[in-house]
Amino acid sequence: MPKNLIQIYLNEAYGTEKDPDSLNRRKEKAFRDLIMGILL
Image 1 (cartoon, rainbow, N blue to C red):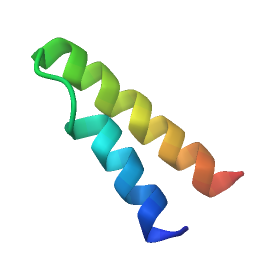
Image 2 (cartoon, rainbow, N blue to C red; image 1 turned 90 degrees about the horizontal axis):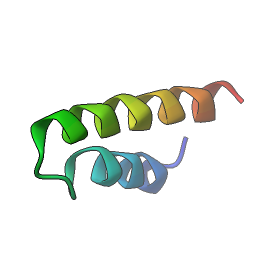
Image 3 (spheres, rainbow, N blue to C red; image 1 turned 90 degrees about the vertical axis):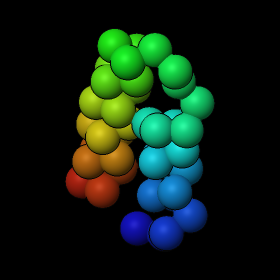
């Protein structure tokens, strides 16, 4: 998987959200999307 795509996922997961609950949801979603992107 290209490094820049991984960085995009990390930015989505960690970079933009201040609220901890929302941050955790975004991290879980970004992680699932990342796994699906690797598998598909």
